[in-house]
Length: 299
Ligand SMILES: NC(=O)c1ccc[n+]([C@@H]2O[C@H](COP(=O)([O-])OP(=O)(O)OC[C@H]3O[C@@H](n4cnc5c(N)ncnc54)[C@H](OP(=O)(O)O)[C@@H]3O)[C@@H](O)[C@H]2O)c1
Image 1 (cartoon, rainbow, N blue to C red):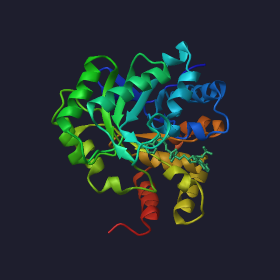
Image 2: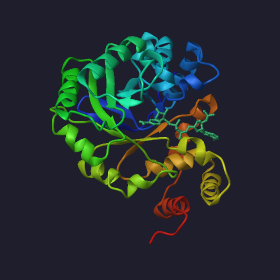
Image 3: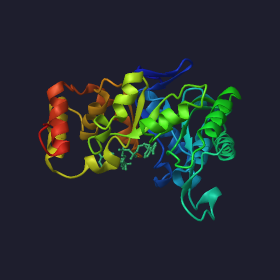
Image 4: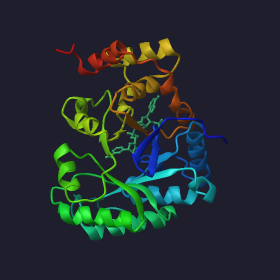
């Protein structure tokens, strides 16, 4: 098995990620969750140079990290980077009995979640830990120090956030020594608001890579036959790829240097993920798709 060349994106001085990331939110939903099948999916990623796997403690009702851990071999471990997240608490798995869905950015919760992630995935360190959702009750001093300590203790190599607005980022960063490495936000032709509401601009200005979750709108962009579907299909026909490759290329073309986090469970679709790099996304093609997504011409 060879690892094909794929752009790498620098997150910190000693961590880079593959430009395309494979997300494991849906891992436990697959009909086949055997270690062998999960290894085949990872191998299909590695064949294209997709080395970064995106996890969260909560995925699969707090089960997806364990499924990945059961599949990882010592050799595979050396060839991947693991991203995981914490702070969402729901009444399931290890948090059964929680009375209300909530966020927990306390030191105790973050540290115990990281310890559990390390154990379930059989890792000595997590490459990148993200705070999953902004917590309205966050004590930024406590959370910031906990994240700094996890880095200096060697349990995680880098830290970042997810779904943070610029002011949430600034608040947490103000209480930290370690630079936050990335913000993972929803961004796609089905959810393009980040391109104009300041989220992308904030990180682009600072040269901070953005990870885009649900780049295919969670599958919504792949079904239907409206104007956006027709616009995607026209580009797909032109460049000999499928609709998913075009929707992904639309994100890759942005100068902020976005890392799409792809979520398919299908081996054949995983094998085609890097087709996104075959698409010619010139400015007018980008705007044709954007116009179709907005449902109107830009002003
Ligand atoms: N940070 C956060 O808050 C957050 C939130 C959500 C997700 N995420 C991350 O982002 C990752 C990706 O999210 P996502 O799974 O929603 O991404 P996505 O790639 O936008 O959507 C994947 C879904 O689209 C379907 N799909 C793909 N190609 C298709 C096609 N040609 N025809 C029909 N259906 C198709 C897949 O079905 P098949 O499996 O059948 O191909 C799958 O259900 C997650 O795994 C997770 O790592 C993060």
